[in-house]
Image 1 (cartoon, rainbow, N blue to C red):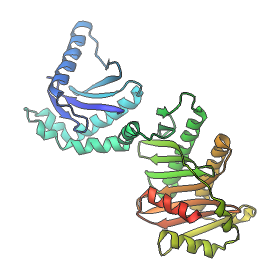
Image 2 (cartoon, rainbow, N blue to C red):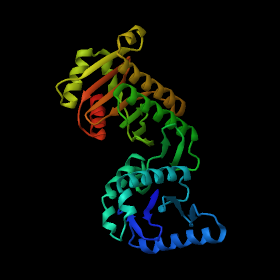
Image 3 (cartoon, rainbow, N blue to C red):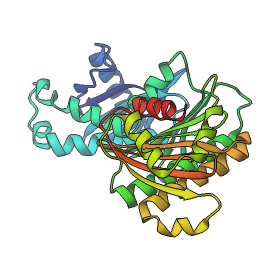
Length: 336
């Protein structure tokens, strides 16, 4: 796991909070040992301890208002990323429990309500998903956690010879998706898929604090039947969408690859979605010599889809509460 432990300890060494998902029932021992080390350093060297290194992990320590916040993380997790999460935990803890900690008399159950807040922090900072990816047996080819500015916070690949250019494409893709969902949808979260004709996939999870992007490869991915769309009318394509997704209505824009004037008819949202799609194509062509076929941006109540259909691009917006995986399956069935 990326984060293995979260503890909050009083100045006297009493652990008042131990995140239950990572708890090991030794919080008193750990709290006492860390407090003793902190006091030893302060009294003998007049310095403070900011981290304790172990063989495969490290404890990051931060004291706020005489309360010690501790996270145990993997050895190679960037310290600034861990400290940013620690700052969020501390800020939210004092927001909810400032008076409780000031008047603490030994009843640690007072702080049990912070469990849910801590879980939310781990979700929107990408930690919960990262832990799942680290524990998966069928790992993606590679994945990474990136800051909103595109800085790589944590990356993993299944091969030491993995092309670092792929991570650069991930960084750019995450920033581009984030920009579009904010400007065109007024949202801060989304799940996105970009798939090329060879079956290479970039799946992106855009969170308020970070982007998590993974690369996979779909097996037996071929769309010879896609040529049928070349002679289909817009009305026929629209009806096929309605039938495939079992919905009553779909908003569709069609952009001919040979008639650039078509683009002028698009609204800003459709233009932005198409721009993102074409940017992903440049990345796919550079890495895999293959154009983008599918772009999916899935939200809580809707989905925006861009498809590369031989001689034109289709931009479709539908109302749906289906999961991203279910929407993607229906897109693939639509193309068959």
